[in-house]
Length: 260
Image (cartoon, rainbow, N blue to C red):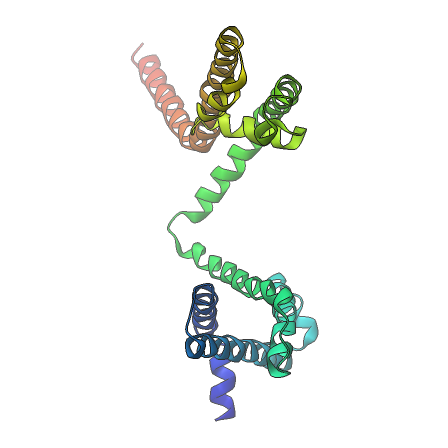
């Protein structure tokens, strides 16, 4: 029986199932529940916490602390389970500590462990290399785009800080507002709010100003970043095709030379 329990906790699929059940209980606990329902979800959640602690104990005994902590995922699991222990202690001691209930969410991050299944996706290595290459190629453009957001954000802050504190009350909120405009999602709402207290002439120039921001940042800026990123992603395929074309050209040249 002990060997079966040990084998069960060393099975990653079983641990993933516990993580999914725990995530579901945390999700359901956020709703307005009947007292008996809330008691059931709290009981399941804390029972799973005990199972997580048991899992770590079994793995530490099976692999040894040195080997266990040599894997980064194990360190990650250990930290998240330790962070969830205060809620378990409070539950077992019948102490109401609502201020630490948010620690339960940390255990859901163990779901990232399931990302290891990504390696079974066909050509995943090629995809990862493409993303890495694209990030390296577009880092300069991304940095320049962030600088542009910063400049426009600060400039807009000083222009409209006295008009709308909601969107431009301080430099940070101004940067966030400009970033929202760059995404071209509801960009017209901000100038509509600003122009409510402005004269017709100032309203006209305000609309022009935000149209300029949308065109330069939202349309051309994001399009440039996207195009460079996608081009770098597929550049490896283009290089392969170019090599094949070059090889074919060489063969044709050799055949033409032999005929001569």
